[in-house]
Length: 80
Image (cartoon, rainbow, N blue to C red; front, side, top):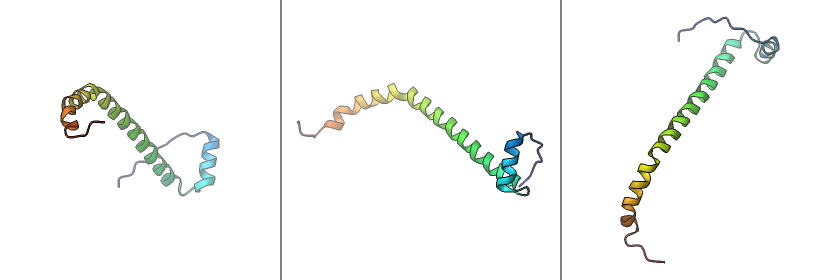
């Protein structure tokens, strides 16, 4: 895996907590995993919004198809 060195700035209290939590030699791994999780969450949220938009756009078409096939779907069922 290709690696890139970054120089980032963090609030002092956050940097201190990070160092206490994972130690000075494991910060890169911790930050990498945390970023992966956060990026995946953002991408999933974006996909969810796109799917909702698509479903809403197709709602009228889906209802029309359902209405068109409704008589066939009910065919053979006993009347209540």
